[in-house]
Image (cartoon, rainbow, N blue to C red; front, side, top):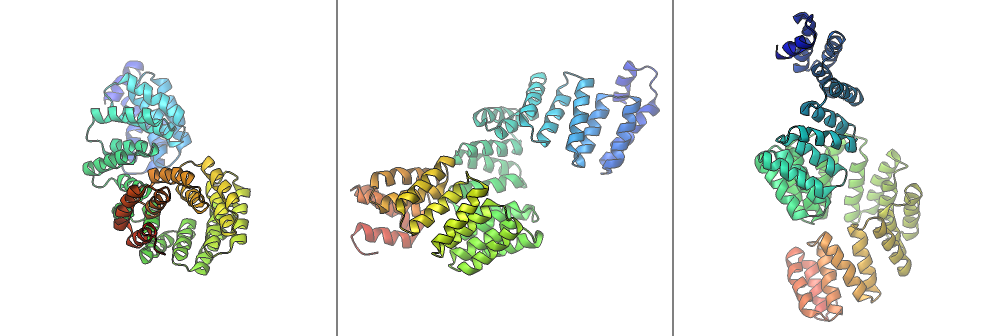
Length: 437
């Protein structure tokens, strides 16, 4: 009745029955009859085009995924009733649904200006800033939202994302853990925890996080993908294959699952099986650069260097700025003994993606093999900043320091490596003691 009373002041001839369509639309919306709700709201607008009716219409369109129509309704709501914090917020949300974050940001900022104590406006302003890559501003906005509402798990989860974009992984972990503490069913927080642990090379903790996400939403594919790669990095191949099969049960045409199978078979040295899986992914997406460089990677591992180069070239023909393809090209050229050319490919890869861990490690390895130890040290230290707890990073750090005569530092790396990977530790110890590995 409150809305009707407001409308009556504008149009004294308005009858309660004229508002019946809007009320009926709200009732249909409440029980999930979205199309019926839309029809009711549209009829109500014909009688009385209020901002509230347009807002209700936008919500019903969103429920059906009609985001363009929702945006149009939200825009009309703001035109009918300007300078309203709620309608400005809803318009920002509609722009977000269409990934138009610059426009969304403007309306979230206006909503926050009109209602300075609104934690939601500041939260979504922070989210929009994060989507635009303005991470420092995003962090400031999200921290303000948390100050206003310290129990908002979404705000902490979004804060973690902005820290992760800046590669501040400890801060990201802290934010995600706070989100989980506030809401034990925060699916996104568990998934993002897993991704961050993977970035840090902490695969066992990544597995735990991805499994928690899978328990919450078994049909969501993203945490299954995470488990495929995390288990494979831990040499838990049976678990990794099991996750691939789960994904294929949900989506039999899933390219990522076949790529995962290819990676797992290759890790076990079963290259023909790996190539069969990857050819399946290639048949599903023949123009995918990822599919081609993945095939190239397995061919390199199998010692089929010329064929690996051909696949990397196919990937680059589709996407010239594909860092992974340049990295595979470098590996294959290195296999053919063309180390200088391999180094150039790694440098190109890092020019495209400075945080490409694989390219950084392989470049360090190539410098090490050619006796360029200062350059090797510079590159492996950068790789260590990306993933400090990776066994191959610790090994190469120890080996390079040993070659440069920094034996105390090399011994420190040995101590850490013995915990991470005893076999690698033994190999580094033999190198330091002058024994054959």
